[in-house]
Amino acid sequence: MKEEIQVRPSSPADFDAICDLLGTVFHEEFSGELKDLEREIVEFDRALVADDAGQVVGHALAFTRELTVPGAVVPAAHISGVGVRPTHRRRGLLNRLMHRQLREIAEAGRESVAILWASESAIYPRYGYGPAASRLFLSIMNREVRLPAPPAQPSGSLRMADPDSVRTAITKVYEQLRPDRVGWSSRDERWWRYVLADPKDRRDGATKRYAVVHEGPGGPTGYALWRVKDGWNNHGPDAEVQVREVAAADPETYLALWRFLLGIDLSRSVTTRLAAVDEPLLYLADEPRRLGASMLDALWLRVIDVPRALAARRYAAPVDVVLEVSDPILEGNSGRWRLTGGPDGATCSATSDPADLACTVTDLGAVYLGATSFASLAAAGRVRQLTGNDPTIAFGWHRLPAPTEVF
Figure 1: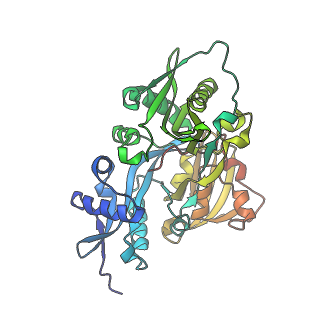
Figure 2: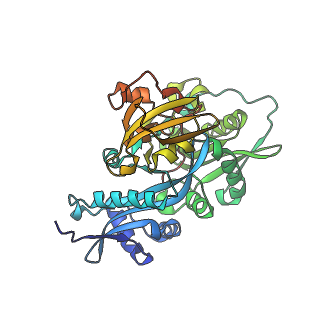
Figure 3: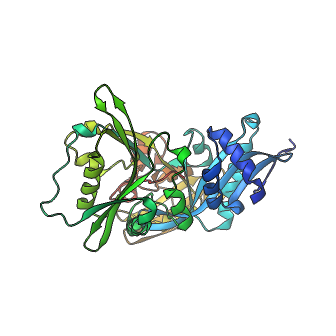
């Protein structure tokens, strides 16, 4: 069938049309300050549009950033802004955009993995993305939760400020922690401006964003970003503290930040949508049920280059296994791969040896960050364990991935 709609690289001239498309698809308005922020981070040479006689009817974008994976930091294509205009659905445009994007990432050779947040979780497994990291949504009844008392002689103090005024301290803490926090992404100056930006039309009736920094004897050791949505009812004050991000270099700093957040005056609840599945707060609260934890999907990961991706990360235990991988889109990934490695490094190369385990590239993406296990996937019938050589323990990690931002 003749393809009347062209899929092509975008250009700066497409920006307004792209914003209009994404505003329609995601039911929000891109204008003013928000639009300026989006323009600053977009990489037009890594964006594809579907063009129907001059109208932008589809879009997919890749950001150039790094991702922390078990034991390493690797280049990772951060996929965003994927959508098709409602009038052009069911025409195969999403397939064309996603397939071309994957092939272009593979051909460029810079990144061996790609990641995204899924607006609809049923969509992206079709393109080889596996659910690689989850997150907790916490809705905390803060007046019914007690945390351990602080040390008799605290080693640091808290300083509250506007986020921009303490950006240097926040950046220092983030960069200090990032190499060991699986699921964290790099932030250059553009991304820090984007993350800390606080457009009024994104506040939904809440206050501006605040920052609190924990200062130790040697400098900053942690920070938190939050805002407050005011509320009153027949019982009195009922404000909600909305926590955006908490980063701490040590347990004392972590405890001090959460004691502060749970104790803000006139508040009766504290919420955060980006807590880690193994968040330490779960083990500090005297009433963990009052944290109101529920689990949601977070990062979806797609392996672009199987041998490079598997060799790039580290492994919790020695591993020598042959994986048989199937990939219907990037055919070069299909085949048998011998992975040999451990905590200090790894190698991966093609082999004709019999496979120990057979999986799809989607399943490989799901286990890559250490949150999902081969054993769980095998129990679900998703992978086939062909021998007794099970790599489940090796693919795990000492902490679960903890995504900190939606991009």
